[in-house]
Length: 453
Length: 176
Image 1 (spheres, rainbow over the protein chains, first blue to last red):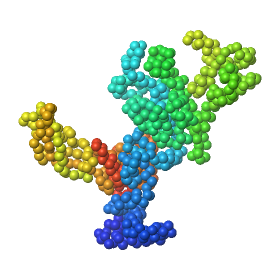
Image 2: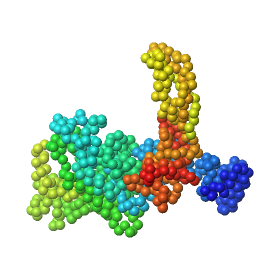
Image 3: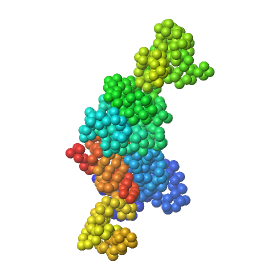
Image 4: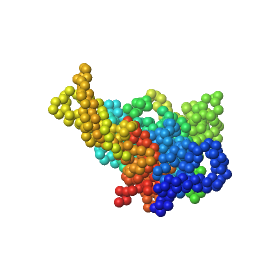
């Protein structure tokens, strides 16, 4: 390299080097008023400071391509002592830019490497730089929960006698593609993947950069990722487990390297995400094993006992995939405009508003008389789903939500041939992201369930 | 950097190993115990090359175990700040890349990758120059400079840079 041969750093005489640095220093200090101030200060501080500036000018050389191998160590010392390095993060408690030893600071990204930590500025920088990438690839982020969302696991000894038949139906672990029921004897577990999960991941991977975020421990998370994604094409190293989170018993997007305005979350537990409710799509829990039903105190029979399963084309994952597609489409509508300020959260709300669009709902004896009906969670939920709520009946009302047939509004609805449903109709629409057939939520069903219990 | 040095260690040996083969047993136990471990001072013990001396054994009360002070020659590996190392890339992401040189784990931050190399996401994430001529991805061999080291009991961590002359990819098995 020609520059290297011209470089005085490589010259054998140390006098030459000193002269060169002196010249460089003078040239540098003339260039701005600020550095001449520095110079005055340097004179006061004496020779030590001067030495530092020599080294600084050495660093400029390096940028110009006149490499200095012998002085590099001093350069890095100099750059850290003058406070130029902001220590954007650390690896093994060493700043990964200047190499200086640091105290433990910033957010740990243990799922990438156990020793890596980043500070907030660096995280925002990484997130910002990602927006351009997103724009190019037309992708958003999707954070997926494992248990009860994509799959259901049970400990082997919790299997009921009625479920023993499953043991002979398991799929080989050697080739997991296509299988859905797995026995993981070394973990004493059995895992059932939710129907439609393979197609779901395949289609979602075209629209999203996907993360796994589970409350399970790391070995479990890795093993489940292997079942869902044997080739490692969907998740890569983006597998976050309980051990990697920053807050106990909570999930948070702070370890996800994506702008919050571009992240969607799919989880069955709303409470796990206290700070990111607007990003969250709550999915109906998938209970395949009996032990899983017991855990949530459901007393009906599990899918495994009934030897049945969720429907593949109409199951919860298929519905959610439609929601994801709609949100993705809204986000990338008119991409010619600048999309860096777009936010997926209001778009998710917009998709939700389609569910009960055109319905006008009147509530009868659902709310306590003293309370403001507008403040009730059910009222709000109905409005989030796109329904119009009213307190009095009129011709435009389509649904009456009641608790018994005897009320004035309910009788009016029967006379006017309007739907009379119980509140489950709204809850179901909320969790299933779909308007439910009203006949399944009539008040007779409510009464029947009551007498059965 | 590699060093050939003499180290000492007190070996505890079970009485069942006493007899003609005592020395062989001692040496094979030493190899098992020491090779592949780290010490902050000397770095990673790569291999034992010879036994300098075996001192007098001391019988322990109660257990019958005997402690022998053993001096042995070994090859150790310790990275230094400013050293140039060749390493294999193990993981590439938007923060930078991770590489391994034997037992040493090295992280090279995006800040210390030349500015003309840009991160490309995908199923094979990589850093590529704008003309596409140089690509850093998993399994690549890179030459890098160490800017910081930390040696733990079993692991060595380094931070490195490739933002300097003559550093970067030296061999890409995927491209070959």
